[in-house]
Amino acid sequence: MKKWSVLVAGGVLAAFSLGFQGAASAAPTAWPTGCTFQTNFDNGAMARCDHSNGGHYKASVLCTRLDGGGKIDLEAVAWRTSGWSRVYCPALTLFKSAGIVTKAS
Image: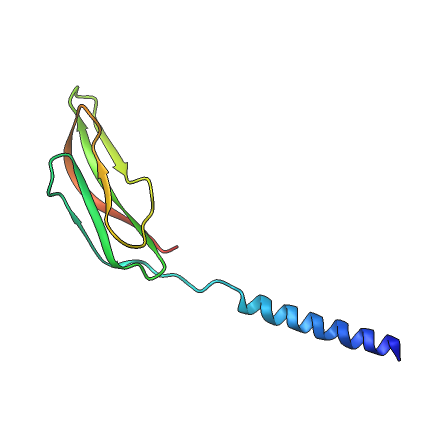
């Protein structure tokens, strides 16, 4: 009788662990929507999205070096799910253009 109880208990534990494992999987994520960016100041940009939908976004700028050394493409350090993301051109560069970078996770 003890062997039967152990087998039943083991089967129940296996069923629960498999069931909970499927339930614990992460929900799918989508791309952010309602995204806009602004270049209303001299040397940088701001970007935000109205709905993250589980995704992330950050501001991006393209800067030109004053010494003629070419262009520098920079992105904000942190990925955002809400609020404004900001990034600035470094010293001795000029702002050229702005944008927004998004990802679905």
